[in-house]
Amino acid sequence: MTDPVAITLSRCAKTWPDGSRALEPIDLQVQGGETLALLGPSGCGKTTLLRLVCGLEQADPGASIRFGDDEVSQLPPEARGVGVVFQSYALFPNMSVAQNVAYGLRVRDMPAAARDRRARELLALVRLDGFADRRIDQLSGGQRQRVALARALAIEPRVLLLDEPLTALDAKLREHLRVELAQMLRQLRVTTIIVTHDQDEAMMLGDRIAVMSAGHLEQVGSAEALYRAPASDFVAEFLGTLCRVRAGLRDGLLVPGDEALAFRPHEARLDAPRADALSARVLARFFLGGSVRYEIGLDDGQRFPVVAPAHSSHATGDAVSIALAGPRVS
Amino acid sequence: MLIAQITDLHIRMPGQKAYRVVETDRYLPPAVEALNRLDPAPTLAIVSGDLTDFGRPQEYAHLKRMLDGLRMPYFLMPGNHDAREELVAAFPDHPYLQGADGFVQYAVEDYPLRLLMLDTVVPLQSHGMLCPRRLDWLRQRLAEQPGRPTAIAMHHPPFLTGIAHMDAIGLLEGAAGLEQIVAAHPNVERILCGHLHRTIFRRFGGTVASTCPSPAHQVALDLRPDGPSAFVMEPPGFHLHEWRDGALVTHHAYIGEYPGPYPFHEGGALIDE
Image 1 (cartoon, chains in turn blue, brown):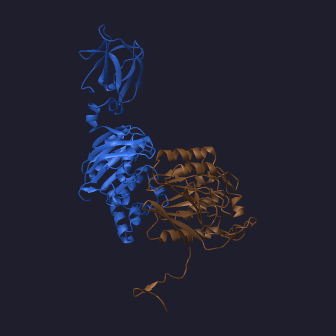
Image 2 (cartoon, one colour):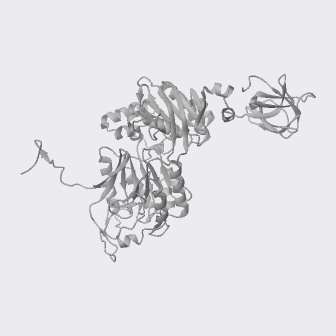
Image 3 (spheres, one colour):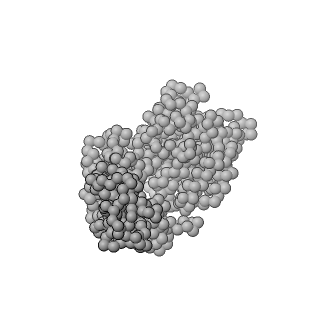
């Protein structure tokens, strides 16, 4: 791999011909070798932004997309040096593993011997030596994912783009592959943008996360920074669960009052009822193995979840008081 | 981006002749070989319907064995000789065939030219149609990415060709609706069709609609209003569509061995002997 390049987006906007705005002007930098996760709900513009970087869409006039010092916004996709893993049609089922990996090289007219050699190098890199002649349907989900990655890397891309690469897989496999993909991306150190609507995926794969909504960037930062210090309600609610309660707060205890409070479910602690505390009741208790999730109700009808350690033993119907502990979402 | 289009394969089992004449399954391997030999290599292939002759499971299995020899990704769609359920069952590794709303309709998003595949099939009938549900699907897909260069592919062409017996089993419903939709979307670069077993072009809704030859038998060129339903063994062919400089350039290519190539020039001058 060559030295990783930074991706610099300036004033990247996208307006459809009917006048509707897919993306507000966006400025964003991805450091060389960094993995940035674009996170947001469907329709927020994250895939459009990826397609602008890839060259499948043209940004509105005035935009600049630089890979290192090179302005690429006017180049067609094949001239940009991007490797892409799409969610759909991940691999070509009628082609062998090696043919899949060499696909981009064949389309770029690399001679057969050279592309075979390159395909084998890449398969070794993703720990699939010996699988070159296998059919795709003989591979496990994890192996397929690695072939898709090898295919994207075969053209020695300056930039790797992953569009919801794990979305089509079932939940258990996704969890396993997230770990594997995260390790591989760290080892590769190729500048990567990954698009996902899944917060766990973004938190595990992204060195930083850019949260998007309605065509603009809400906040960019590490998973921890976004979780602990969200810049907007949208970020706070999109990254994890946020409890919103109108009550008072005195010495960490929820008391009657009319302040707008916001906290994470695990930041609240349930204690025995107290005369000076806000009166609350356990509406439901769910034992989840590593933790217990309570549904808490207040006398005025407000409800919110609280997550407690697995040994927590309040029962449905119990009266409780609520304390807010530890560092809180600000 | 280079799209190879093959169509109307009408695959039967080995030794079986379509219409007592054409062993269609002997014509597909040379087509696969011709596509694999192309340099530069096609980015992908589309197979625009009438994949098999009778839509039988064993025909699809036989078809799959042959198409899997392609060294490029390929995308399928049904024609009037196909059966949707049997097609989908035979290609479990082509999940896009699950389609939408009971139809084998899907979008191919991963390339510079977007492809929208339409299902014109009326089960057990030779003619085609685009019902309001299928047209709605197209309208919604086009609305998703209004400016993006897009080609539509469908088996039945949406226009009359002048070959009367084929026009009688053409797209009998929905052509006007399609034309309205296409006319409102100047980003529709082309409508790529099959069914006619020969190359035909026509302006349609402000874009170009085309039909493609078969790698086996061709429909006879006969423009008489009472011309009989008949085919000829003209050279097998396919289309090669190149997305280049923001437009789709189409080449009609023949499959088979022909004399040449011979040089035009020698020593910098046209050969004149």
